[in-house]
Length: 286
Image (cartoon, rainbow, N blue to C red; front, side, top):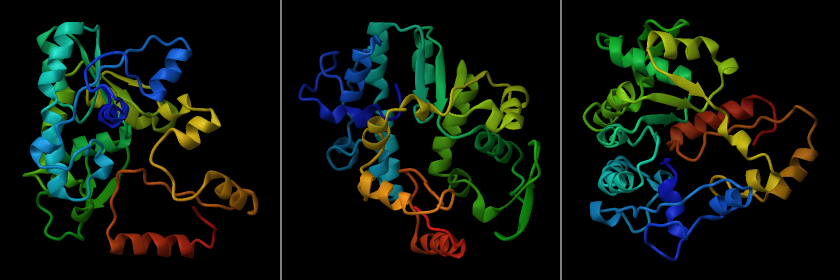
């Protein structure tokens, strides 16, 4: 059960659970001989006060909607448990934002593996901040402190802390349940590769004591142009052919490509700083 499961459920005419209604991606994999089934769970957005069909976190625009969205995710626990009871799979792979999956799978003696789409570095730093709280006695948001017990000397200020440490009551409670679930699950699938961050892959395994498989980048499974350009992410604001023509007009190795993904939300001050930095680089950019 991946985090984009809810995103895939809105394309079917039949709202029932079953195998008869795959998405085009599932259908493509079946045509390649992959034995894959499709179980659909309705995302209860209206029940928590969200608009109908708000099934993807990229649609969320503020903290209130985000908290409702995660309340929605918790409501998936019961129908998911019913599927496990019926199907009894050998293993459950669940995104980090389904922390309840560890206990639900455990009820049936099924190992749960958590999928993390970020990096070893970010999780190691997050663990250190949560465990040792080096920011606790810092007087100013601008005063630097060192993140302890990680492979490199990482300096931060309180203003750069993750959201869950800046907002311990709301986002913090969610992340606390995620870290607790991670510690008790069977292991981790990481969307990274060892050669990219070997010191932090080792730290995650040895210092933090986690069983892990580095399987990234998972985007390499989509090597066909059509798959990369048309079947992943949201629709771009520019046509891919126009973009390629523009790139072809530039010198080799001269263009900066910056991508924050579909999830981040920047305020006007942050966007202005990003724009100024790109402009000051003196390079054409996307």
